[in-house]
Image 1 (cartoon, rainbow over the protein chains, first blue to last red):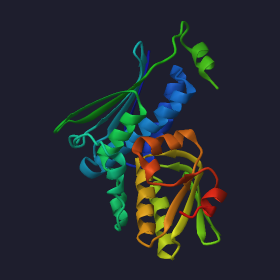
Image 2: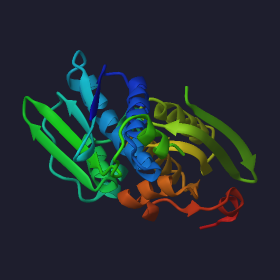
Image 3: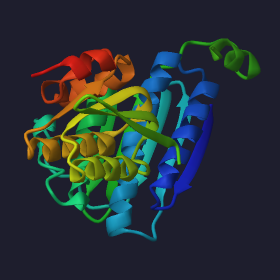
Image 4: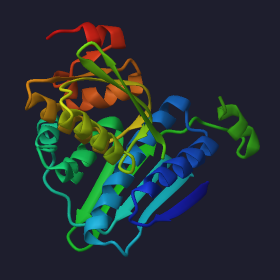
Amino acid sequence: MAEVQILLPALPAHVRTARLVTVAAARRAGLRDELVDELRLAVGEACARAVGLHARHAPDERVSVTVRDDVLGLTVTVRDRGPEIGPAVDDLAGELLDTGAGDPDDDVVDPDVALALLTGLVDEVEVTSHAGEGTTVALRWPLPPRLVTGPAATQAAAP
Amino acid sequence: MDLSLRTRTEGDRTVVVVGGEIDVYTAPKLREQLIDLVSSGQYHLVVDMEGVEFLDSTGLGVLVGGLKRVRAHEGSLRLVCTQERILKIFRITGLTKVFPIHSTVDEAVAATD
């Protein structure tokens, strides 16, 4: 079992940092290649959402990203201190079409759209949100069974 | 900057070749490029996404914004993409019904409706 935690400032450039660290930790934990792709997309979406919310609502706070592998699998948890989530978005295309009118600043995507997209990407997603406390998005993937931990397991997962 | 953008003209179409990662950090660059093209009177755009390694909802928002801008001038915005991981995002969001998606630039440039 191992746990990696990063604390992100509210800067869009560091969303990529979070993707790179998370992907590296997931590979080390032995996550299958096709799931690594899914993880990159979902974690990128979760972090972009959280960093965007912090930039607008909590610029001095940090977004916490934790990658943990244990008997349950690989769990990535993204915690923000933004406002409570809105109602679930059913019509993603419609919501996206509502953005990007004439105003260049209007292309900002609704954070609830990001949430709906990552929920569509990943089978196991748990979202908890409370006013004043922010939102926690937990994403989980299965890890292949392994008898040996450490370097041998990592090597087996390498492409 | 982890996003590359190149444009070229093919007949009355402008092809925008995008490479790298379209995310919350780089998407503004793509948005500027699309706005510049529309401002300079280029309303028929083909966005070649074959070199795109990552796309998030911010990137989708920018593409939708581009589509709305060209449509205001009765133009078009077509995508070229065969990468499954990128197509999946268009499918989940239902944007496959909004954007014409082609397998090759030639096909997109030749398309008329």
